[in-house]
Amino acid sequence: MDIRNKVCIITGGAQGLGKAFAARLLEAGAKVCISDINQQEGEKALEELKERFGTGNVHFVACDVCNEEEFNNLFDKTEEFFKVSCVDLLANNAGVNTNLGWRKCMAINIISVMLGSEIAQERMRKAGKAGQVINTASMAGFAPGINEEMTPYTVSKHGVVALTRTMGKANTGVLHKCICPAWTETKLVLSAMEQDRKDDMSEHIKKSGGFMTPEHVAEGFYRLVTQCENGSALAVMKDVPYMLIPDYSLTLIIIFVLLSKLVSRTLQPQVVTGHHLLASFSLLLLVFCYLITLIF
Image (cartoon, rainbow, N blue to C red; front, side, top):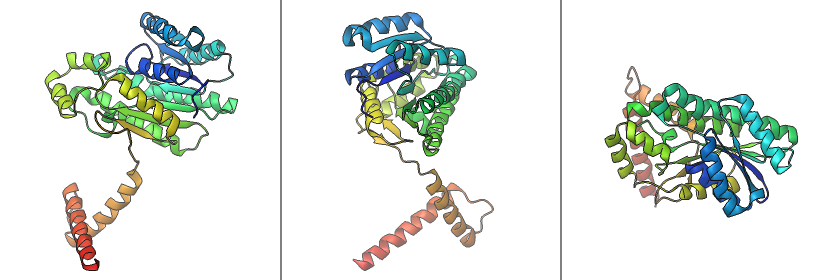
């Protein structure tokens, strides 16, 4: 997508990643409506972005993304302000950590993402636009959580990755992609550290190389929007190139099935475990390497 003059909505856009995403799109010539449930912070961010990018290029609409009526109103007000029939891009970025409880975490981090995707897709298809839906997931969407308190957050982000890839494969006419940042210095992360097991999180952040800036993640967001294909999941980590995480789920299942049959015929265990699969894979790899040495 050439982002110039495209109309974009970013939920959770008053601060952190959302505001950084908005600034990066505005720098590239897009028109952006930021949205947030916190009206005071949203209006503050609006004035800041207006000063940098011009009054006519940025707008703010308060919205509770868990409320379908308010979410639809967000689209209506954005299209009315920018005088277009339909927006070109929705960034489902609003999110919370586990501090508000697991129900609220799931409601905002995954249910509202599904709601926003449904609304955007319906409107874009009706308008005949090949638009995009960009979901904010996390590297937590590919791994187990680091402690019990993070369980709802981790589960919700796994859901965002699965939703994005499923919708990408559905070929709906609207592109679905997700960005998966590691630890980023935002109020969301810092507030989680205050209430959860701070020592566990601090140690995990230290091992991963420390915090990234929102601006670094925003550059990855821009590349995801402008360069990546439908269903893409872009990993953003400190001191690592921006990297697409391939969806090998079906391929891996087929490989595991074949290895399980091999293990079952040779060892006949009651249950084939991960250790069996790893051992059989290692053995096949050694055989393959040995054959290569014989050939060359």
